[in-house]
Length: 297
Length: 323
Image 1 (tube, helix red, strand yellow):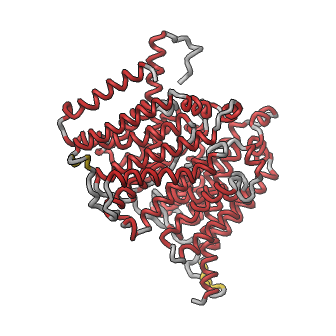
Image 2 (cartoon, chains in turn orange, red):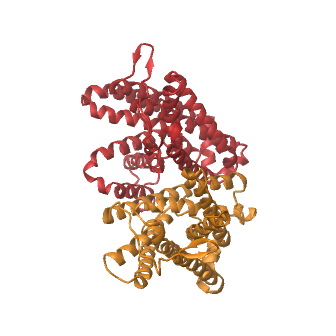
Image 3 (tube, one colour):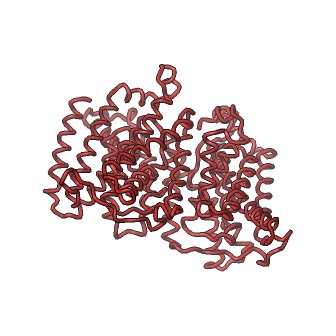
């Protein structure tokens, strides 16, 4: 393969994977914006999206077009249950206890999946054809287009939701100042629940759409969550445009890293980026320094 | 440190010394060796989490660095076990210094994020740097430690060595807690801004505690390497970092005795759960969730509070927090 084609190939791979990281980062941001909590179970939502989709298609025998939305709904329910049963009842929430609780939740979910479906890896059929499309000497799978399309659709939909709808604006109000929001009559606890639901839905969508490419197993969520978290921090915690751009950046870096002599370390790339951001510019690329000081994290 | 603590220490030392005679069964002694090794780590982590109010999600990395450094220096460079141990501690301390410097200057949990990333990076390094570390299968033939002519070989030998060190660490930790430094740390945990306003150099104290906790973790790791005579990356993954945090959180973050109790509980529990292998993650996550929801101060501290409440007889509905 010629050098420019190789370059393009890595670029395509990076953009596809990076979109997933961006979606995971958006999931982190939604909950963080509404509650100030970092939900360490976010990666598990992604994993569950893939797992539920696999179960619905393989065991229950539903067609993909029904299974995927249903899987997303199932994981949304899990997110709501998590918020209602675990997060909300905590009497004195401190950042430390919230981190530990969400880590506990992620371990619990992993354990549940392992119990029900075992440790093996599962796959989903590609949404449309499996034949690669050749562009500029590099091959791109139709599934990659699905990933990019899904990401774009989610980003646009969320943008419209948070800018144009009353509920979306209410959630943003909660992020700004919880007490003021409840004073003007916003049901803060409902907004928190909705943000968990949204976050789970976004995660599940990401999981479902990437499973045909990278497969899914009970422990897939951890790494995805970590890398998505890196993207969220790189883009500026709470900033969703930043999240997507950062995700793409990390994905592309990782793809090129996988092709380089350092390929064994490719998983470390996203994390080195995270540490780098924390050392140099903790507010992230697009996060304003003042905004990050206001955030209690 | 008050008389109460010295008395407790004395009693504890007696129990520790007498335990092997009561146990007899060598298998349990080896479990207790692990409890000791992990306790060295969790006492340090408790100082960081409970007193400085920071979290480290990558302490397994420091533990692993201790183990690998000790292992490599004694096998490849034929250094004495004790010299290697010191080198391991120094390396961990240096890395903690480099990491803590920039992140602890900020308020909030940036250290937590940094340690999370650090932990995974170190794990990937252990797995990927095959020429140095032996890759995923690790390496073995790590020589035993010896003091003079006494080679520390059997479970019992290790038991006494590790627990002697653990007791020393505990004493030092309790001393720290009941000193100016300890009070400064607790003020930071209470409110960093207020502590700063009182003239406490918060960044300085936080960094110091972080470095100390990293050094203790490396010390534990060194002992681990010499006990197992074999190291592989799978012992030092994110799961183990979470285990360490759980041990501290479960027992009681703001109590070194609590950390000890939590460590003992979570080191001994898997032994009894062998039959429930499949449910292990589920139970583990469940414990974390339940403790954080209902007894966030840790079960030992919670137990202490419960006993106190029963004794002083304050049972009115108003002052009792609803469960």
